[in-house]
Image 1 (cartoon, rainbow, N blue to C red):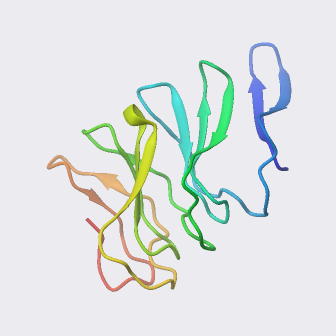
Image 2: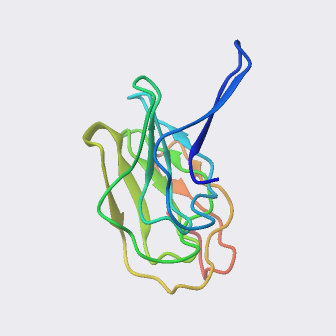
Length: 141
């Protein structure tokens, strides 16, 4: 499908919402619910971060565009600073979503486009988020 699927569990209503999103295999990661009530999904083959505003029932693909293939597959992890972090699969950098500012950025050094991190991350008590390597040479923190 090219649109978001919404299920009203109490009323047993299933419907598609939002604009059609071009491409195939757009989003594979689990969404992350932020304090602002929006759900964010990292792109796999889509050209940006998907934002679903649950209060307004609106859907948008955030800009600017991110170019690449097979970019992010793991669930985002919410840090104590309110940002959501997604480890790269074949993307070159970590994706950081800033829900309070409704923006995102790419962080850290550029890595190869080979698959790197496929396991979900964990927020440790010290504030670091750890992602176990799949084909990466080391743990990402």
